[in-house]
Each structure stands twice: as C-alpha cells, then as structure tokens.
Image 1 (tube, helix red, strand yellow):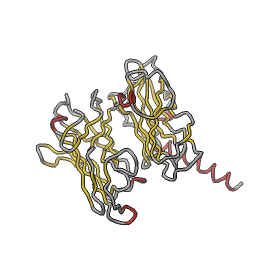
Image 2 (cartoon, one colour):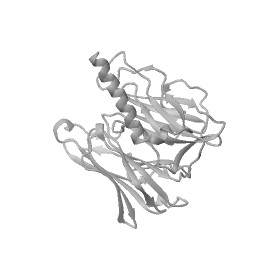
Image 3 (cartoon, helix red, strand yellow):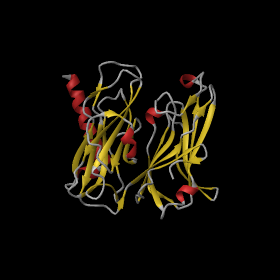
Image 4 (cartoon, one colour):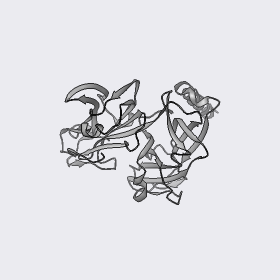
Length: 321
C-alpha cells in the first residue's frame, strides 16, 4: 500500500506541474496527438539511431502550441528530434536512421535529458503542420545503451498539443554549431562554430530567438551563444557556465532576441578531457555517439524562414547556407 501511495502522489504532482508550466494545453480548443515509436527492442550496443515516419491530420492547417516528451525507457533515451517532412517514405515502420530520413531537416521539437515537462511555445507562436504544410512527421530517437543491457525495449516519442486557431507567427528552429571537433587527451579545448554573417545576410528580414538549448556530450563543461555585429559583441543569448549533460538547461528568452540580416550567431563550447571522470588518454572527435562529442545550439525563433533549419560549420566553412 505504501508503494501505491507514492506512485499516486507522483502522478498527481506531474499533472499539477504540467498545468502550472503550460496552461494552454488544457484550453477547450486544444487537440492531442501522440507520435511515438512502436515498442521496439533496444540493441545490445552503445549507440543506435532509429527513425519512424507518421501521418498527421491534414484536413486543416494546424498550429502545435506545446510538445510533451514521452520517455518509454529513461535508461536508453539520449535525445529525440521531431521533424516535419515534405514527402512520404512509403512506410511507417521503425528503422535505422539514414537515407531518406536526412531529407527531413525542418525540426519541430527536441528532447534531451535536461528537458523537464512540456515544451510550451510563446503565446503568439505555433508550429505549423497539416494542410498546405507538413503532412508527415519523422521521429528520430538516439538510444545510448551504455551498459549494453539485453532484453530492453523503448516506445518514446512526443505528445503534441495543437489547434486550428492559428497564431500570429510560425515557429522556426535552427541548429547552429561546429562539425569539426578534435579534443586532445588530458586537456581543456575550446571549439567555436557560427551561423556566419554571410549566412544570415541571406535572411529576408529579422528573426527573433525565443529558446536556446546548448548541446554537448559528457566532456562539455561550459558553453555560450552570442550575437556579433560587425565583429563586436551585441548580445549574450545564453550561457551554461557549469555544463553537465544530464542536467543541461533550456534557456527561455522572455524578451525575444532580435537577429538582423548580416549578424553572426556564434557558439563557443569548452571541453575538459583532463580531470576526474572526464579524463581521456585518447583523442575525442565529433560523432553521433555519446562517447564522441558535439557542439550545437538548438534555437527556436519566429517567424519561420523556409530552409533556415541548419546553420553549421566545418572548420571555417559554412556547410548549410
């Protein structure tokens, strides 16, 4: 009986927290759609990426106003991304990511271990899908089976709260960062990557940043996202002074940060391969597995600009604009 009471209290608290942090999900016009993996065995290997495409309602145009991560196996899920797709893959079966999956680049929502509760969009912003927009969604899940456990499964995904009452702005999301990473053994290394002024000069108008998540793996110790104009610092957008992957924060920008065409959005990531549990005797490079490293910022903005979904560098070379 005591265990039952603990579970009931936890569930009630979770519901209350959802009401408090994102009250829009309980408005009368809100509809709910769950996009989650078919229950599937997690391979007995450290790193696996799986994808599954889904049909979504398309009789009308909709705005998603909140996304709630649904984690089926907390011991396996490293992160998730939800993409909008312009085309039908011809199958809704779960499969190893690759091939056609990479053509779905417009991401709508993102989950990693630092995310808690529903992801609530600003009151005047919605993620468009349905008629005359995305009619397919792609769910990407990264499993990190660090203990190589056998006989485990996962069915994670997102609960989408949406409405036909369209908001003033369409949500856009852009991934900013650096794909050239080489961390020396037993050292502190700083890596920088930018959405360069050459890339943002192609924007037809200003955009406004509303949310930032800085993403590194387990060697990351601090990160910051800044805006530069004509080589001078204009705005500190987000700073993680003591970065820990498992508790990395989401930065909500109550006052949206304006980005003008021609401004540079610079990400700086610092890694420690020298001390304590982070100590490495070998080089660590960029890679998709959690034993490798990344230097990305996942940034939400409005209004959406079609095609402005990734702004990444390989060294000093812009590879997405």
